[in-house]
Image (cartoon, rainbow, N blue to C red; front, side, top):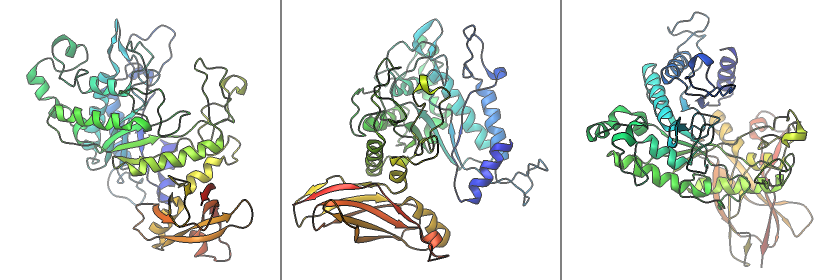
Amino acid sequence: WAIWDQIVQAADTEGIALDFDVTGGAPLWALGTGRPRGNTNPNWEPSASMYGAFVHALGVRYSGNYDPRRKRTVHDRNDLPRVSFWSVWNEPDYGPSLAPQGVPGALTVENSPRMYRNMVDAAWRALHQTGHGADTFVWGELAPRNTGSQWGVFAGMAPLVFLRAMFCVDSSYRPLLGAAAAIRGCPTNGAGARSFRAQNPGLFAASGVSDHMYMRWYPPNDEQDASPDFASLAQVGNLERGLDRLERVYGSRTRYPIWDTEFGYLTDPPKRSPDPTSKTRELYVSQATAAYYLNWAEYISWRDPRIASFFQFLLQDVQPANRGNDYGGYASGLLNFNGSPKATYAAWQLPLYLPQTHEQSGHRLEVWGCVRPARYVILDTGLAQAVSIQLQPGSRGAFKTLQTVTLTGTGSSCYFDVHVQFPGSGTIRLMYLDALLGYVDPLHLHAAYSRSVQITVG
């Protein structure tokens, strides 16, 4: 437990909340039988009951009332901090994360939704048993796209296909019955279908559903491989409408918030575009384009009232084990593997997006942004924070502040949305002075800057 205790304690000291995504792989003794010979996938038919027991142990340990030295739950000043945000597994609609995706011997029949339904139920019950019933609890952690109609063993299925089987309905959202229901672990008759909601409370009373809204190398508003069963950011409406229909089948009026718990763009460098190792020849974006797309994506998410979060994955690229073969690994970080910042680092720290960058003289342009560090200062000190909107006229010269935006909220949001009249064309950026240091020592202010955006006025 040592590494997790250290993470929970360090985060608590810094005022950072954690989302505990309790995922695989599972130990060998918690896996099911029937794995292909020689296969080492640690996510093969994981035991839902053993998973629930592990979540139960987590719930006890991170209840805010557990002293690991005395191994007791009587309140003690040495108690570990509480964890109050939980999610279930990772990308259960993707074969390497949960297998087999199809029913062995009938690979066109969905199997992973049955396993995941049982794990959601086990986690839900374990957390309620350990005093976490009022915590934030989300399920899903969906991979946003997969194709094909034969799920196989380690392939994957589209997220809306996965969810329909998880909720025991067909493609027309009618409850499955008889043999079609039995093979998917669903109630086989009408009476069972009517009790499905009561038997699966986590599917109907959770805090939300989590989705990994990756757009790969596409702009955030354009899923070029579109499908009504995909759930990327550009097609998150599919997920919103599909979830609402699934809830209504069982008489629930829940309209789940969507938690985006993974997002980011793999960049070139360190990736190579097109990727010579890929059959589909992935076209990775430059670091500058990724910064632009990242801010655009967050703006789209901010405008959607159903999207509850915008998580960045990763912080730092990992150094590839063999750079000659994998061409940079999963390179969605804000930092290169050597620790140097990518263009996405500033874009994440101070997001800046303008829906339009051309306007006539005398008119205003919408300027949207976020001051991510300021939220923690407001919470810590109660001080109002401000960000400067700056313009560099033409193509050279100094940046000058045109408008200062004050963030005076309770700290629940870092965002602002204003309309600014610019005197002419040029380059704009955001500038934020780190008042967390400034109020202690005003002679040592640290300035942070957003990415720059070209505008045309006239």
